[in-house]
Image (cartoon, rainbow, N blue to C red; front, side, top):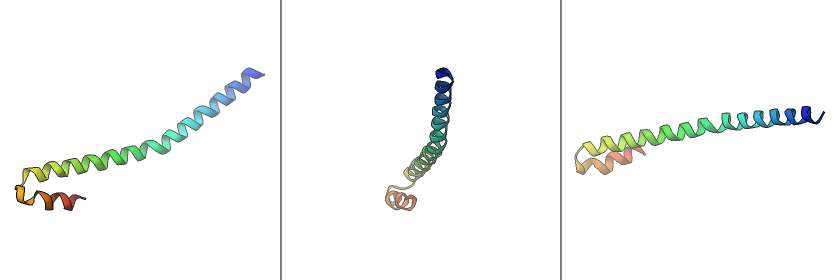
Length: 61
C-alpha cells in the first residue's frame, strides 16, 4: 500500500514540475528573443556613422 502512495506522490510531483516548466520556459524564451533583437540592433547601429549611433540606439529601445 505504501508503495502505491509513493508512486502516486511521485507522479504528482512530476506533473507539478512539468506544469511549472511549461509556464516558465516561454517567458525565458521571450526574454532571450528580446535581448537578441536588441543586440542585433546595437550591432547594426555600430555599422553606421558614429554621429548617428546614439539616435539609432534610442530608436531600438
